[in-house]
Image 1 (cartoon, rainbow, N blue to C red):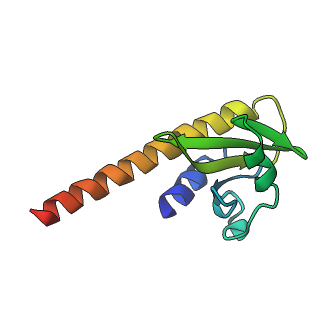
Image 2: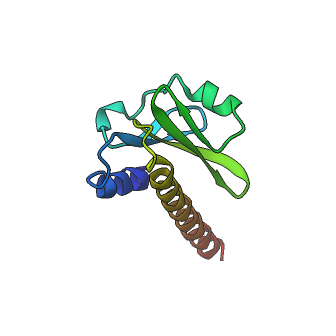
Length: 115
């Protein structure tokens, strides 16, 4: 999860709004406001009930991030502006890439250790 926070820190200056990454339970694992890390977002059950990938509730935009067909993360931004969906999609792509890189590196290291 440190990789996600490093990614958030790199791009937080681009966005004018607070944004973050949550796991599938709503636990904030990375956020532009680091004080929120470790807290749960109470809106996640509502987000999960809806079938849409992109959801706006109470002025907060959410995007479900699927990796290998499974919902792994939810990216959010405290805004309902028109560009939020695009911004969150870009963050979601980065999350998937970071996760894939991490998994490949872990698999490669495990393979070498097992030899």
